[in-house]
Length: 189
Image 1: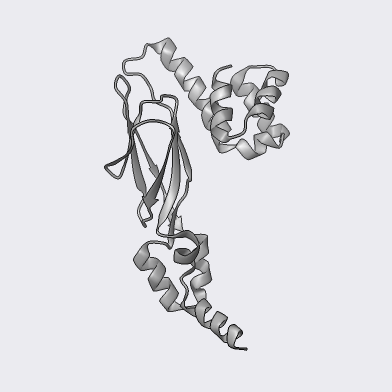
Image 2: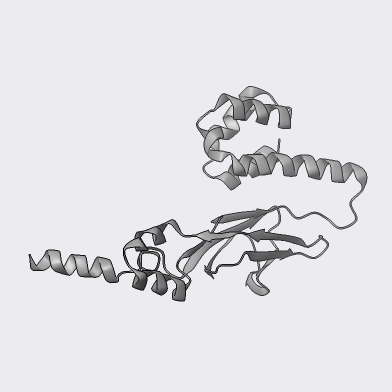
């Protein structure tokens, strides 16, 4: 009985976001270049790719700026949303305030970011090729799970985007262990 009472007390006093997720979120960055500097909300967090960084959680969007010599800066944002783990706090106002105070009630919408750096002063033909490659990579990164399981709609869309044979695509998909690997291998076609 003592264990049950202790367990119930701990449940009421715990802050689910803080306990299960912590006040930082691990985010992976990768790019089509190795020598890219990544700034998160103005602070340098990476100086070469790929990298993995613990970023403090917060309620506002995370602004990412990628810089490399000879390439245009890429600016993007990662939205912040309520951390699903914090919904366990519905039983206690104390838990909500703890998660709020530690920013653990927030979660960035992405755990991985791929940045496609574009050369400064590209010619029209280079821009067209870059845009096509970026579309293929973007599609592969966003739809990796559906592509990997062989969803016919996604495979047809990828065939249309890439213009390659179904056999070549199936081989690349089968050999890709991660979203980034799939995106990079598809871009090499």
